[in-house]
Image 1 (tube, rainbow, N blue to C red):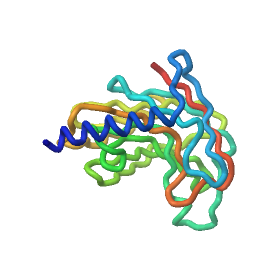
Image 2: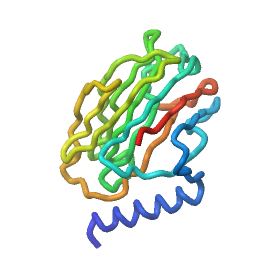
Image 3: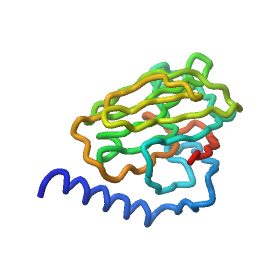
Length: 193
């Protein structure tokens, strides 16, 4: 069996397991409140959904719960994940594009957070304010992930040259890095389809 075929089978098996253990996303519901509970990494609700276009567009609003202090510079710079998708018919730690975030220097910083052939790439995109709705977009091109923040193109990160088309599963809010959420963190996300 070819590696591409094995990856396809693996991706389908992964999606089947995810769908069996997660809430389905109703077609008429586009806005969700995600909560990462104190001591957890994963947000609820846990959803399984596929990216079905070459763009992921959404609005997100953080509240004051995005402010945290670990009293450790190294831990404070760990990137939390907002939203994105796995790519190249592979696991997200192999190929993916996401928005990351962290509370650092008394501001909420937004990053491009990607894995390309297993190598992590992070790029600073800008800052946002808690309580303010912001627009996020990742455009998937043949050779890059193009990141937009508030309708402005900020950066483009090269995509794997070995990409196979296939399942692009969505990745939802996640706290960490290494440490779990120090308190409940709430993020409102509205999908733009």
